[in-house]
Amino acid sequence: MAVKRVLLSEAEPGMELANDIYDNTGRLIVPYGTILNRMIIERMEEYKIVIIRINEKESGGSSKENRLEDSDIFKQPGYFEKIKEKEEFKDFTKTFHTSVNEFKSLLNDVVVKNSEVNLRQMLEDVNNIIESNKTGNSMLDVLNCMRGYDDLTYVHSMNVALICNMIAGWLNYSEADTYILTAAGLLHDIGKVKIPKEIISKPGKLTDSEYEIIKKHTVYGYEILKDCPIDQRIKNAALMHHERYDGRGYPGGLKGNLTDEMARIVAVADVYDAMTADRVYREGICPFDVIGYFQNEISVYDPRYLLLFLEKTAEIYVSNKVLLNNGKEAKILMINKGALGRPMVMTGEEIIDLSKKKELKIAKLL
Image (cartoon, rainbow, N blue to C red; front, side, top):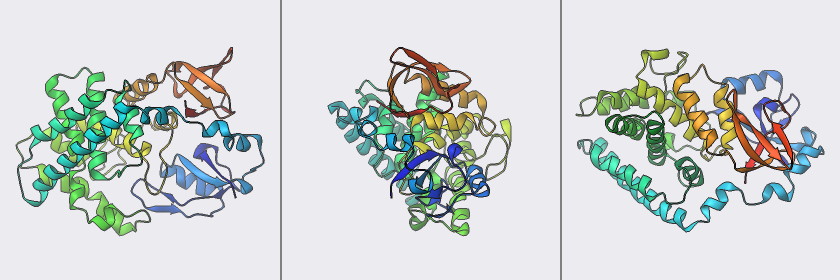
């Protein structure tokens, strides 16, 4: 039976799930084989699920759109595959993993041996990665190409530090504040080293009690860092990066500007990396799908930082070739400020505003 990926916003009652659905912590929400109804779809929306897999037999698998997505044109090498072929990218991966391993060792020394936080050395590892990117592509692009590698605490933390460093540049932060924000991203998940490995590495289906243990990593992180001679904003990011602007986060349920400014920036970088990463329990998704998702979540994150991040991310792909879900190649002409995930594109001599053509979307970067 053929399987098709669809955005949750396009899901309809009667479709049959072709995969288990988990939240971002790996907790099972809806099992494989479930026939969707409106209540189940709404439940997945509450858990911020963006993309699902469905069995085509139950969802009209003979439709033109479904046949198109199985055609050879959708299987051709895409934008990220081309980056991976570059020799510069292969050199980058070596530096990346060397730096992550050094960071892992330093972090474990803090937790296991009670060593001081060697922030200078940790950030030197970050800078080594930044300087090693000679691919000509943005750091976000290169990180997207790293998917498929082990993407647990240490790699994720390094990714978030690199994304925070980019955001600091977009905000015109001073060198000192850039240093602090990058460090905040690097150490935001330090508390996870105190979570049992069998829980942190579990490939899915966390129990409610296991999920509650996972949530404690924010408090554990603050406890590890609280007596370290480092900037308070770094400690706050470890504690507050799961707080949400609308007050629905944890551990304190803090709302709006009650959380640290840098923690609110780290929250955006943290969720972006988690959503675009390949996990054992779900597949990383197209950047424009993530951008569209985030823009619908404007109340959840600080809009000042979220909209800046989304706009800058979308701008990376202006003039890039893409494949639309109708099988046609197109070129991104400009970004729609009100619908950043649905830009203006040109296919042949036709200019299409994807914000007004809801049936069309970017299926793949070429």
